[in-house]
Image (tube, rainbow, N blue to C red; front, side, top):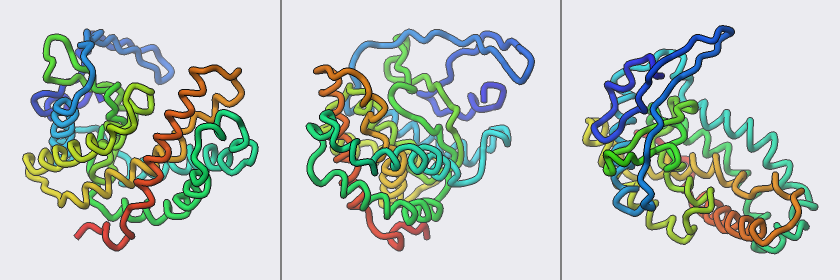
Length: 283
């Protein structure tokens, strides 16, 4: 990525960290000496979410049209969604969620609402159709993990962003990058789940406008489906921190489970409200 022409395709307002040196360590290993970006300490607000969503829309359109990236970074269209689902959800998350002891654990039983288990598995039944529908949408190159944690806000340009962690980049359905932009801070416990619906609508409109600015207009309802379905596939079944069930109980851990249960409920409701496959087709 750093050796490609990626930097020249980034819209104004997005940049890479400065690359100072590359050391070849042999055995297919490289050491990258990158800028240590000094960042602002102000919290994310709606204007910042909207600003970066617009830039992510412009970025997706530019990378898709420019063909500036080396072939090995591109991958097959739609592979990102399916790889995540088969590798993380089917193999690890769903088996754990099927176990009665998971739901009987005090940390889970105290935080999950009575319908959450059944709704998760109703949603799981719908995921194969969602994946098929995502494959039918316009496929565009995405950053792949565009959470606020990977969109650094530098002190010397507080209206811009330094984009890091491109390891999950590839061709996926339009709108994909909005998913982690929306829930990244909530997943980390740094954003109230109640704020997500408002942020959702702001970034959806801004991203769609960014696509149009770069000459790749997409109907907002199709962007919405790509955004919501990809987010649900990636995050709804892994939001509960089940890997921490063996830890000694603490107030902090109980609050973490309560917060993640609220996030899971939001994602499940979002997934169950998605339209049928026939309404998500790209014309």
